[in-house]
Length: 183
Image (cartoon, rainbow, N blue to C red; front, side, top):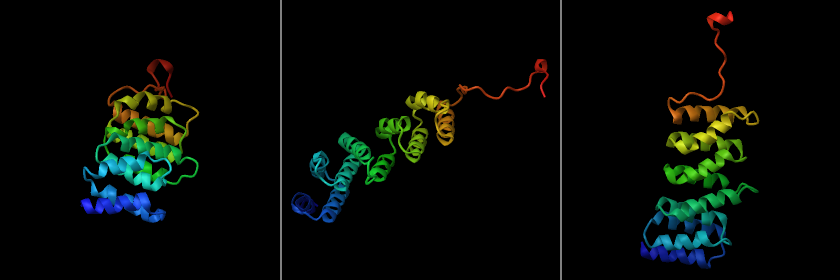
C-alpha cells in the first residue's frame, strides 16, 4: 500500500490529465491509511485543484473522521452553486456520513434558499438523525406562508417526528363544540 500511495500522490502532483488525477484521488480516498490523510489534506487545501479531485479527498477525510473532510465537502457544495458540478456529489457524500458531523451543514441547507430538492433531503436527514437543534428552524418553515407547500409539509412532518409528543404550534381546524352550534 505505501508504494501505491506514492504513485497516486505523484499523479496528483505531476500529471496534467485531470481524469487521471480524479482517478488517483479516488484511489487515495479508498486506501484509508494513516499515511494517506496528510496527502488528502493537502489536496483539499489546494483551491486551484480540480473540484472533483478535492471532492474525493474531502470525502476520504470525512470517512476517516477528519473535520477537514466535512468542511471541504461543505465548501464544495457552496462553491458549486453556479454550475452545479459537484454539488450533488458533495451533498450525497455528506449525507452518506450518516452521523452528527453533517448536522450543521444540513441545518444550514434547510434554512437556506437552496434548491427545494436539497432542502427536502436535508430535512429528511435531520429527521433520521432526530436532530433536536433543528426544531426551531423546522417550526419557522412549517408556519411560513412564503414557503413552498412541500417544504412546509416536510418541515411539519420532521417537527412531529423529532419533537415527539409536543403539541403542534399552528392553529388546527376548529372542531365544533356543543356551544358553537357545530355543523
